[in-house]
Image (cartoon, rainbow, N blue to C red; front, side):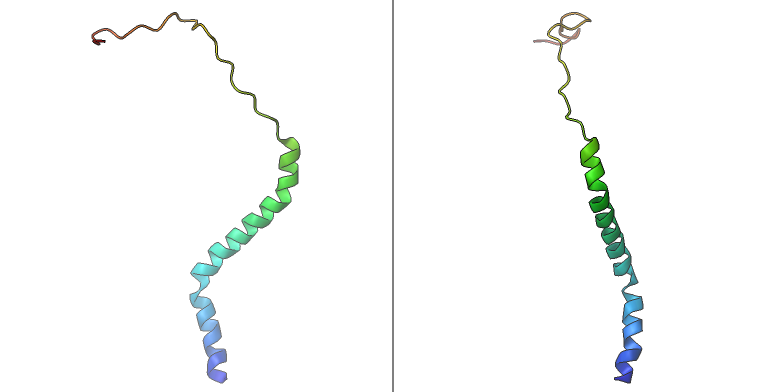
Length: 68
């Protein structure tokens, strides 16, 4: 039992590279849960961009030197 209690802190220390990303993911998930209601309240419905039927710079023409 004493050996096991000696090894537990060693293994926990060895797993620090895994604990840091797990803690970051947990914090990010908690932040998303807390911020989601405010984000939904502020969200506006995106309108598609207006496409002009006629280009203000004139009709499209083939570039010089291209064979079509």
